[in-house]
Length: 164
Image (cartoon, rainbow, N blue to C red; front, side, top):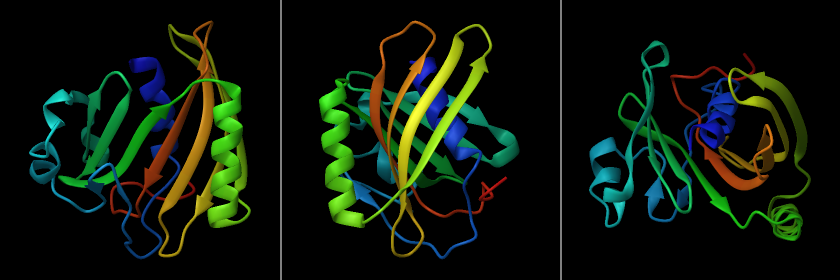
């Protein structure tokens, strides 16, 4: 669990509030909904409190199988991550669909050491959608663990600054 959550945490550190608020709505979770609204949804009992970042006023809730992560800023939903099929073909299909839906994205490659876990490698495409929310499709691997594919939705917010 922690290994894959670090991908989302790394992305959170680089995005933020320079654009107007907009909404993503995925799997019944909508940016801006309160923590209590999100956690009262059917199936939300699968989510357990995860990482907390008091400096940035952020809280994460994590559900397993498949991995899903909700991130809140001041008790409002700002990000949602979900894994999808981990094969290469599914990753390419997801990129293809997003490119059709949103146009050309920006590619990102990240390689860094994660203490106690090994090297983290992530290849992704990121789209800034109308209104400023971000959508990312990524394939990442930590150490010798199997590679994972995930989608990530991120709304502009007041807890994380973009580009820092």
